[in-house]
Image (tube, rainbow, N blue to C red; front, side, top):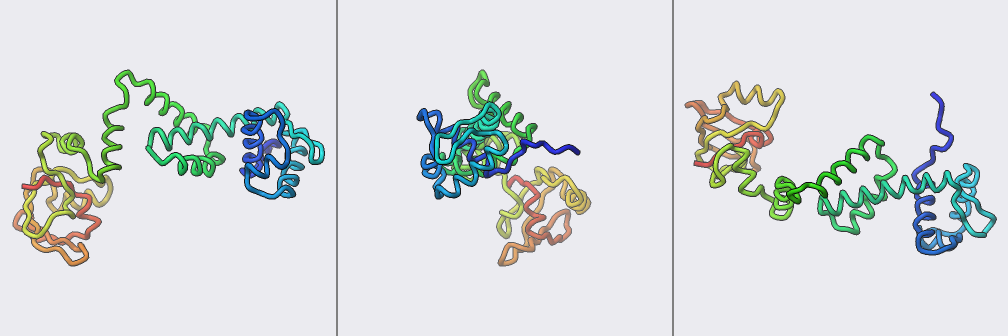
Length: 241
C-alpha cells in the first residue's frame, strides 16, 4: 500500500496547529512564540521546524519568521477544525469543564477517523439546529449527570408506565423488599439465563438475603430461591411494590 508522504505525527500536527493559531493573533511567528505557546525549549522547536520544512509544510530560515506553505495551511486548518469540533462536543454538548475539554480535545484530535469526525459534526449540527431546542433526552442526560439518577421521565418511559413508578435495579433492593420485574437490560447469554430462571416481565419477587458486600443476592421468585451475583442483579430492572 502506498504511504501518504504528507502523513505526519501528532507532535508535528501540534506544531502546525500552533503556528496557525498564533498567526491568527499576530502577523509574524518566531521560534520564541512557538516555544512559549507549547511550553517547550527553543532548541526543541528548531528541530521540529526542520522536520516540517523537509515536508514542505513551512518556510523558515534559522531563527527567522515562520510561514506555513499552502499545504501546511491546509493541514493546520484540518487539525484546528478537529480541535474546535471536539472541544465543542465535549464542552457544549457533554457539559465537560471548558479547560478539561480543551486539554482532552488536544489529546484525541490526532486519532479520529474522517468518518467519526463527520458524525460528530453532524451530531453537533443536529443539536444546534433542532427546531425545538435541545432534545428532551439531552436535557435528561444533563439531569442524570448532575443528580446521579435518572429523571422521572426516563423512569416512566423505561417502564412504559407513569412517572410515579419507583424504578430501580434489583441489586439496589433491601432485604424483605418486594418488586415487580420491568426489564432485563442485558441482551446476551445472561438475559437468556435470567429468563430461564423465571425473571420475566411482570413477575413478582422478594429479596430474601443480601451478602455484606452486595453479592450474592438471594431472591424468592415463583416459590423458588435463586441466588444471583451482584452484576447479574444489576441487569434486572424492577418496580418496587
